[in-house]
Image 1 (cartoon, rainbow, N blue to C red):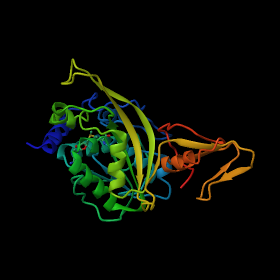
Image 2: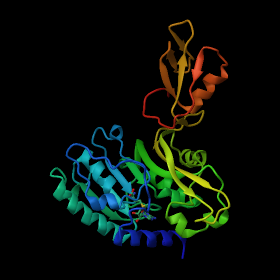
Image 3: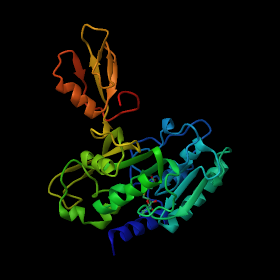
Image 4: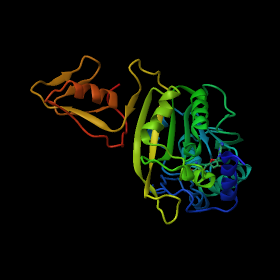
Length: 322
Ligand SMILES: C[S@@+](CC[C@H](N)C(=O)[O-])C[C@H]1O[C@@H](n2cnc3c(N)ncnc32)[C@H](O)[C@@H]1O
């Protein structure tokens, strides 16, 4: 059996018997005015963060969600789009599609604005999406792509890139891990399927996105996720896993490399009203300008004593350079 098949089996079981602790998130289940999340969707929240950000959702975007789980995030996306087939949900597990279909019927009873046909469910694989080229404004996946091994991750990201319109965005949440993991952990198909042993360091995760062509990357959140300890897992040392929320935007790749925003800001505190680096960045006196890591590096290389560059907060929420 391949690890992809093991993964499908794990989620077939999780569709038939909801497993509250399967993928745990520190995010509270958020509800908005008029938006009620049925209990069964909360129990089937198999994500590790949130991919639903209102600022991505202006101008009635066409939304694609890959790996539907119990359907909670699709309902949250539908809250913003409220049109027939405004959200397309793709999953490779029949039982998960069936469970989410049932959950949408329950959501319809609890939310008078919601109709099940706001979500169009399709059987399909993240590695071969049943979706046309350049047809999607916002694509999302939560806690699925970390399961994929290198070549499959590349394929899954290429598929997302293919279906997005120019300047469309891929919003993702996944575990990451900065420590090396031993082969026993890496090759354990079940731990991988449970989102515990496939995760990459953040820089490798970002590189996988920029390698397929995404020109702008936003790191929106980074939080503690899990511990693998020697008593419960095949490891000699404690392994700390975090989860991240990342958006990858299908902007053209800049000639000098991608713009990766990790939450840094530059502040000019010299004697002039502003500092202009003549490369498109104007720093007003004592005002923060959000900068991507590339611009932060270029400003730091000027070795000026009147420009402060802050550390990455891993909480970038828009605006700034580039
Ligand atoms: C960890 S769960 C996440 C579910 C959902 N995103 C959430 O946040 O609750 C992974 C989901 O991906 C689906 N899945 C597994 N392998 C897949 C594949 N190759 N292509 C598409 N979906 C897949 C599973 O059925 C499951 O719904």
